[in-house]
Image 1: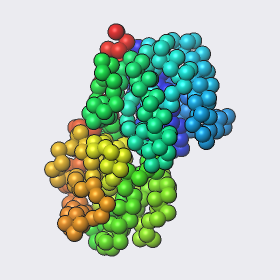
Image 2: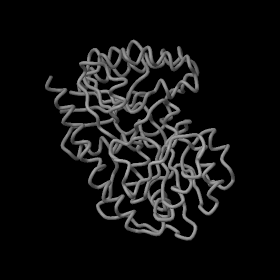
Image 3: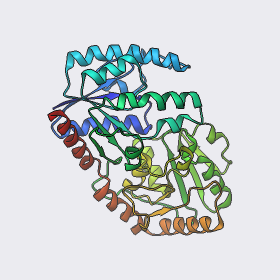
Image 4: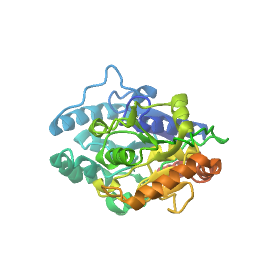
Length: 361
């Protein structure tokens, strides 16, 4: 089976999506699949799509500009796909355009739904959200198969009668317990942010920092405008990768996952950054339903998704962080859980089995 993974969201190191795409194709190859990347912006095969290419076109500022640009890109992609004839094209959701729809007509396309994009767009532009809601289904109805990262997304967005599977995000879990050196006297609490969005709940981290002054707080990544409103007590770091990220996680008593998922009218998620924390043996604080977590694990604290922390919330978080900083066993439990339930290789085997079933249809 030959698979081309369409790189629809290139970006700099530290962004979760480009890292996931690179890792996914690497694992597919390791599992014996002929696989490669295909850059949406440039129609180039290979790893070029994982970083901003110097000759990539700029992003249009208006919706109709995007349709024209996506149509132009789609025509170039069709030339490559018609020449290469992959068994399956794998992609995250795409902006509709006539040429993009032609790809779905002429090739087996498996689409990954990782969020409700219309709800993400709604705070920015209701017109853009309505356009997405009205056109996304045209592509999904022509998909050969659909992968959703949660069951909620599949139930909400996947058309009936299209083969689908739920595959949550995984993590590259090390084979040995990572180094852990949190400060028990003044614990560090970190939030890893893959990209800006009100559902991340960065503002709620600011409130935590002000109401729990005995802890240090760090937001690592690109929080967008929400980062500008953080109090001085919250340190901001750019996206980190490799050893720099490992060092931050090693010093963190706990990591904070998504805190305001209800802002895009969702309840279930499996964020890449939360998986990264657990894989590093860092206990997690989160405010969503996770398909892999029961909600009562000792190494993961499920908190309420609400705009202001209650005294009970603060007390639970305070006790959890103190316990996580003082107890090495808690971090080891998190890592062991990730090894057993979140390992990306096992998840990619299931993804490939699903695509193989699509190929045989």
